[in-house]
Length: 118
Image (cartoon, rainbow, N blue to C red; front, side):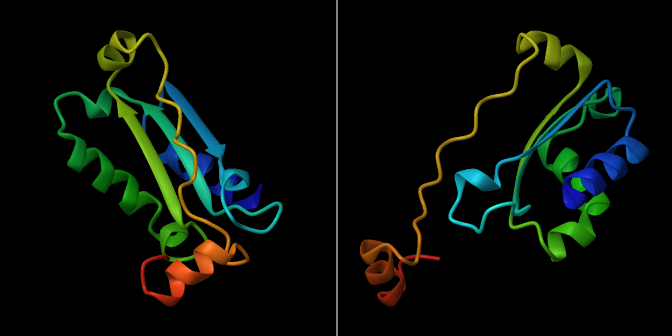
């Protein structure tokens, strides 16, 4: 939980977070047990009021540049102003299931060999 804790600390320090949820979703992906590579962040802050989605994402990327350049492979961002959060019923959407595959899966190995997989 070292990376998750770093993400939580940095976002709390950088934003006036009314709600901050950082979920490690690595277990849903084809990674070793106890990995910290895939995260879902739900952040509600008045700082997002009037900001377009791309600006909000850029602000998060700037704060988490070190993590994104290293161990974090995927970051699902759900960023809201307090008013938008209320309008959602105070819940972020569920993350979809991983559509990738394990390199041990013969079908995925074939796709990778053909340059289709990642």
